[in-house]
Length: 291
Image 1 (cartoon, rainbow, N blue to C red):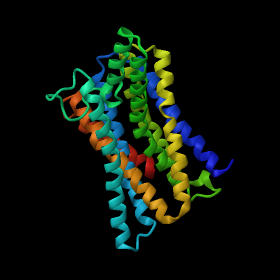
Image 2 (image 1 turned 45 degrees about the vertical axis):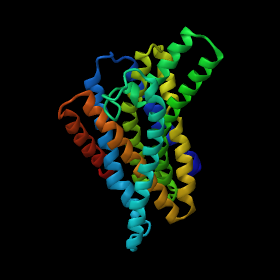
Image 3 (image 1 turned 90 degrees about the horizontal axis):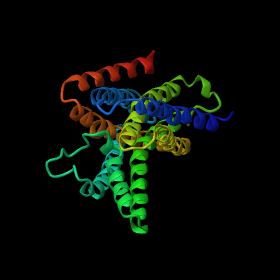
């Protein structure tokens, strides 16, 4: 098997299978499980934080660690990656929030429910309108709402795939010995389990059948594979392209952690427990990366 083929396989397992497992767990969780999901989301955020700070950014810097300017390039690209995902999410929220009844001026400036995180609440609003007024216009709006939900999920998964692809880009044929890249794939797979729950729980709560919700959740992990292909291609071009790819993915994942997972987990369970769960996630990530 070629390195590229192995990257696709391992990313499929980490993305689709990992998310699918989370989806299966989520479909059997009751609606009043906010505390459990809060802990799992903050734990996943901690795992991703350890990957970004202790592996990805260091790898990006090592592509030319003798140059001070290169370090600032990495920092700049992290901000760019963060800014891109922030801007895309801002545009989605600006479009969808006015169409969702429970989101008003008193609502927190971030998601405080799982349904808001993937914009399934927006989809459900259009679904209700379509069921009441079965017209081509409402069907078109429902389709667009579905695309928005799919795009919001993809924003989480694409940078994760880029990380796996870029990590394997310079391994060559000796990919089985790339323990660091494999550790990253494992950590991302673990991280995708609670993220899969964050997709399936609101789908089931919105009335979708459990089997369909689990399948949709698993398919939502496919953008991870696309991200891996992009990351592998960019990482193979040059050390500079590798550094930029890793830095952009790091910034994107830092936005997911600090802009979505951690704030939402705290709003779902207003206590210090989510912060502790995040600390545990960071330490588990350290163990997986270095043991």
